[in-house]
Image 1 (cartoon, rainbow, N blue to C red):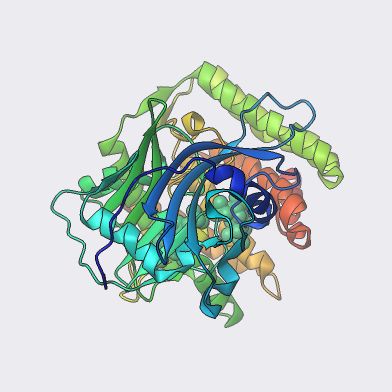
Image 2 (tube, helix red, strand yellow):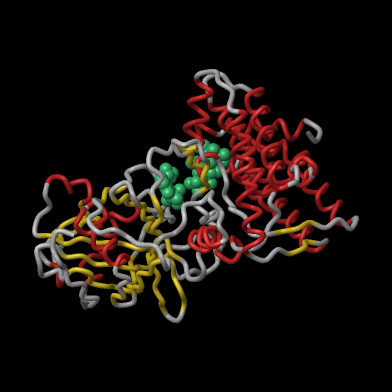
Length: 462
Ligand SMILES: Nc1ncnc2c1ncn2[C@@H]1O[C@H](COP(=O)(O)OP(=O)(O)O)[C@@H](O)[C@H]1O
Ligand SMILES: O=P(O)(O)O[C@H]1O[C@H](CO)[C@@H](O[C@H]2O[C@H](CO)[C@@H](O)[C@H](O)[C@H]2O)[C@H](O)[C@H]1O
């Protein structure tokens, strides 16, 4: 760091009140804001930590705020989502920080100052890295580092501007810090699983170097994770589309991805508990799939004609369980698709983003599940890539799907295709989820999962 800073950890009375009108307008516009479609009616402060005194040239606050929003009809009462914010304070913003502007404060302790999204400001981002480097405790924040791993000082930060559900900063092409935006109490799989995998010696995941935690109201929160940055890596989605556009086969990459997924699964099964799922649990799983189909069919009329045929995939699973079949369940990635796989220039595949489906409760995301769920996510992703190409190529997707399963079996000794009923149920469930997701977020993509729905509804098992 260019100069020494004093991290005060103090909080400032009246701070949130003075920011309230600005945040109400700014927060709902952020990509990572999870409560889209409902206005924010106010905030309550969960925790405020002054990292750099606001009286100086550059002030910096770490805030955890709860956003209050009206409930949707029939929803359970809910205290409101808690968001992590890093607020910079200056007299005026230099032009390079213009895109980070939150607004000008009228009243309260920051009256007359300008506040902005501080991750865009190299000086503020440096403060976070320095805190992890020195394993600082500031107010309620705990900056911790994996023992034996060092963080060099002087790494220059830059914020990641790509669309993501959280916010990331890259430090000198050496580390990437993911700051979680909507934070929930409990053990977060985005730290828990990569840490368990790294400690197990699994090389398919960037090993957490450091992390930020807080203890609030007696509950633990994970706020951020620092990992090695895979310089020059491309994600699987970009690569697949590139190969498709060139008319190139992706089979050998799909096979390598299958091997990488199996490596991660076998390491997770060694590191964390596995359980056996019998009739009751599998019936519940199938019931959940049925329910999600009903909800999606309510929301997307195009799905309705296919619903009876799709249900047979779930009843087939429940029937198998009723006959006495059992399945092994373990911790899995939980939201695996091509965009969660990175290939480094050396040709190795890495899996990232173990958060699971962020909309699901943490307890549900941390439950052991059959590995076929991750496999189904990847198989759907090959299908997505093939259908989003200018000329949809079913043959390309079939080659990838088969190659992925082959690679998976080479490492795990278990070919996912030997359990077609479970795989079909998970793929159908995922395609239904995708229909709802696309209808809500990207209607122009709806035809991609709908093509799969039509296929599942009209064809036999593999
Ligand atoms: N270790 C890493 N090395 C290089 N790039 C990474 C790394 N981790 C994440 N990224 C990039 O950052 C993006 C966002 O990361 P991700 O963990 O998926 O965040 P989010 O949960 O916000 O979607 C990824 O799509 C990837 O391109
Ligand atoms: O943002 P997340 O990674 O949590 O996932 C959500 O958005 C994904 C799209 O960005 C969506 O994935 C679907 O589209 C992908 C191509 O854009 C494709 O590779 C996936 O297979 C497909 O499911 C995902 O479903 C959604 O949860």
